[in-house]
Image (cartoon, rainbow, N blue to C red; front, side):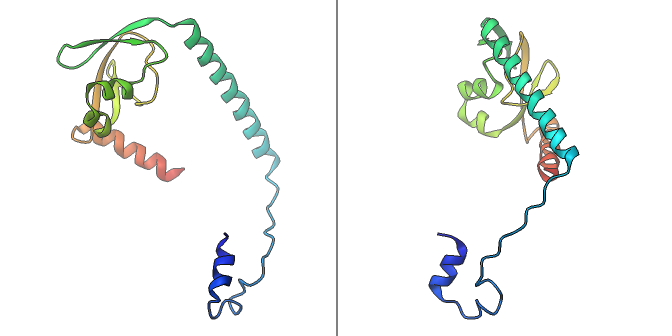
Length: 144
């Protein structure tokens, strides 16, 4: 049930005075041609990238070795296993507190599949790198 119907059901005083008693059709402007072109190009590139990654994942179903802090080595599947899945295997608390990963010294999203043999470190908000990554993710979220 829509908000208008709920208000009408409750018969709130002043509802008609504020102009909400009529349903107005909002005119949705037609997007500019350049935006339509850019969105079309993005969709094409996105589909091509998804297709490429899917084909690579099917071809390269190979085992890779992941080195964790403390010298522990774990086997994973290339283009399939994510840092989040490995964190979950280690500890659910680690998976819940990790904000990002560091793969071979580079920041890495927790949901991005691992590609090759790697040194993996999990970044939590307790570390300086984790705070920096968290700050950047928050700014990105605010800008979107």
